[in-house]
Image 1 (spheres, rainbow, N blue to C red):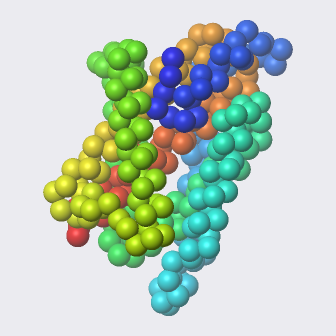
Image 2 (image 1 turned 180 degrees about the vertical axis):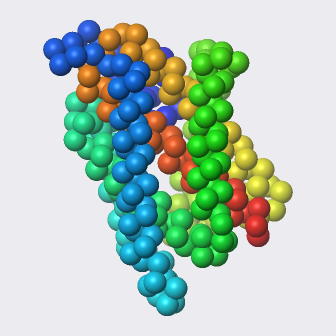
Amino acid sequence: MRSSNPALARDPFAKARGATSSGVMTMNGSINKAGFLIAITMIAAGVTWTSYLDTVRQGYGMPMGLMWGSMIAGFVCAMVIIFKPTIAPILSPVYAAIEGALLGTITMYMELIYPGIAMQALLGTFGVFGLMLITYRMGWIKVTAKFRSIIGMAMMGVLMIYLVTIFGSFFGFNVPYIHEGGPIGIGFSVFVCGLAAFSLLLDFDLIENGVRSQAPKYMEWYAAFSLLVTLVWLYMEILRLLAKSRK
């Protein structure tokens, strides 16, 4: 069972199945820990927002050092958790705080340009999360091997576009149209938001399999971390979509 979410793509439950010395993974435990990580992210975002708001308003610009530092630190932290799930109980809250700082910085800046966009993106994110959870529980969309394969290939395509954009920016090159506010750019963002939403279905499915397989208790933290990864991605894409629609 594989997910488009990099935190779940390696099937971290494979080696952990049957390990019950510290208790087993439960759905409620995973949900509670996910809620805890989301709360940390939101608190960190709020602290970052209020700390830098006056500075940005005074014309000093966006705190680029904090933004890039958070991006790099978050990536490193995520890679450590992905390849060593046993450390998830320790590093998952750290990752949540780092992502909160990143989201707080970006959202604060976007809110100053497009008033009201932060609340719209937040409501949109949790609205999509709730819809996809209901969709999964009701079985309206079946998570099959073909479904995973299609989402995975689409994810790889989007990843390649983003990598070209990031590295191209250092040489003055940018992928045309998709980062602009026209029909192509908005359509691309709608497509990526859909991918993020469907990725939640894959995550729900793999986590449920982990619970069914009686994975060890620490995997609840890993499951919570994986959901946070997808939610952060979804939020960022919705924020981008809303910004494009206002241009």
